[in-house]
Length: 222
Image 1 (spheres, rainbow, N blue to C red):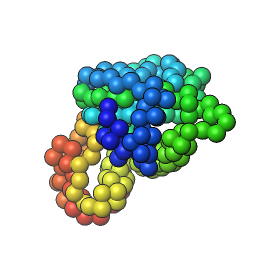
Image 2: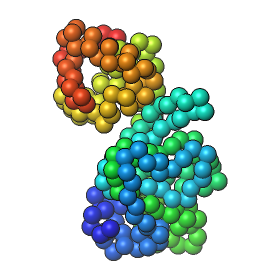
Image 3: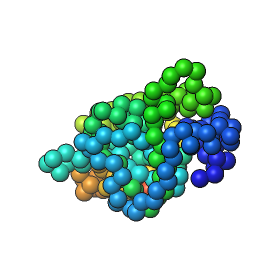
Image 4: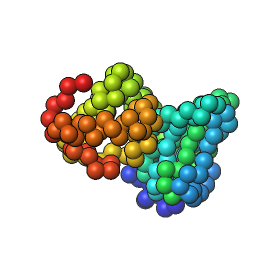
C-alpha cells in the first residue's frame, strides 16, 4: 500500500508520506483480501490489530447464541474497525466483523501506539490524536443508534434514522449504506414488517424508496 493513498484516511490525516511509511512499518501493516460474507474477526476472540478498509466495506454485527442478529454499524473505505479491542488486547470482542462485499483490508498492530515509552515518534502522536477523533465519532454513531431504536413503532424508527441521514447529507434524497435486511437488523425489526411499513409510508406520500435510495417527501409524524 502506497503512503500517498492513505493520507486522506482519518487515521493518517496530517501525516507526511514519510511518517505514514514509518507508521506502516511500526504497526506491522498487513494487507488482506476478503470475500463477501467472510468473517474477519469473531466475538469472543481477542486482537491486537485494528483494520483499515481500503476497498469495499464491512459490517459490525452482534450475533447471540440464539441466532438473533443486530447490525451495529457499517464501515466503509478509509474507516477503521476493532481499534478499541486492539488497544485493549485482553478484552474479548463482543461483536463480529464480516465482509459486506468483496473488500481489501489493511490490518495494523497497535502495540507501538498502546505502549508508548519515552519520547514517541511524531507519527505515534499524530495517530493517537486521530484515534481520539475516530473514537469520538464512533461514540456519536452509537448514541445516534439509540435514538433510532427508541421509538416503539417501525415507522418511528425508520423516520428517526432517515432524519439523521438527511441531516448528515444535507439533502432529502440520499443512499443509505444498508440493504433491506441490514436496515432491519440495524433497527431491530423483522425484515418483512420493515418492507411492509416502507410500502405504507410510500402510499402515505412520506417517502420514495428504491433499493437503498430514499427521498423524504415531507415531515413525517411518528
